[in-house]
Structures are given as structure tokens and as C-alpha cells.
Image 1: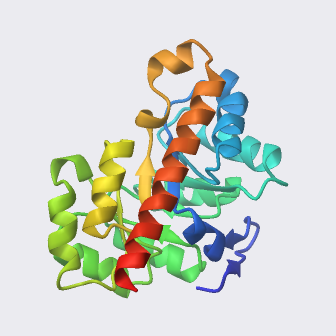
Image 2: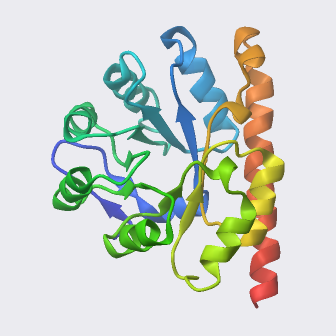
Length: 230
């Protein structure tokens, strides 16, 4: 994909910027009252790719609000849990610049291809993972990652090193490091970034600190991995 691509009526997606820090923040069921301070803390901590799941009440409105609030911050806003064409259409109408699904869906993938809309489909088996790569996916979302672990990533990467994998589900900082050692390329990260008790206490400084910790861990691990490959 080109580094910046536009689809009709939607926000552009910067692929180069994404791969600079390929950590996707997953927002599911977030109270609209805390959406702005939460995402401000996350973006100030260095996380610039945000996914609002479409099973969140008012998801389309949240996507629109985030696009408006972060228009000048270089933040990319997409939609997750896009399980069928109707949810895809709703996400696109709201301005989502990328799509994430929990499963492989032929119709959703075909529509994303037609709209040149970046997509990260949920995959589990080697067949699904290869299919995602051949379909032009940004990455294959390895889900549910916590049920498989870093060893599964390592096993997939051994015969298929060219395929980009994005473990999603239960990705703590410690697990992120282990996944990167196994060869993972991107990540979907939700509640480990902002545990419920931190949200309840409105501890935005702690959220920003955690975001910074994830970003620094990713950068350090990538640098270590690159030095080994050189």
C-alpha cells in the first residue's frame, strides 16, 4: 500500500507512520465522558493508532469525535469488531481509516479491497494467516493470542517469515516483549493499557506513563531484533 491512501469520504491512512509504532489501542465500551482525556493520555504517551470496536454503544459517534479531536495530532482512527458488511458500512460512514475484524469474513475483506481500506483480519490457523497476507491485509490479527502464546508466533514465522502478525488479546508489556522475540510485528492492546481501577480513578497520568512504557519497550525490542539480524 502507498504510505498515504484515501478512500471516498474517509480519513487517509499513513502506512509508514503505522509501522513506525504498530501498536493499536483497542477501545471497547468506553464511557463517552472519559473518551477525550483517555485518548489524550494515550496519544501523549506515544500511541497514535486507535480502534473503536463497533459493538461499543455509539461507536460511530465515538469515531467521529476522535477524528475531530485528534485531527492535527497524527492519530489514526479505525474501527474494530467489524463482523459484517453493515458494521463496515457504518464504520466507513463515520470516517474510520482502517478496519479490524475478529474473524475472517469474505464480504468484509472484499469490500475493504474495493475501497482500498487497510484491514487487519482476525486469523488463527496457518491457512487463514496466509490468506490474509495474499489478500493484502496490513497484518494478520492473531486472535485470541493469549490462548496460543509466543511459541505459536515463532512456529508460524519459521516457514512464513514474510507474513506480518499482530497478536491481540492479553498483551501485557511483558508479553509484548516475548512476542517480539518470537517474531511478531504489530499488536492490538486493550485493557492492560488502562485497567478498570485506573479509569475509575481518572488517573490519566498513569495511562500516559503506561503508554510510554509500551512504546519504549517496543522500540527497544525492535532495535535489539534489528541488531541481531544485521
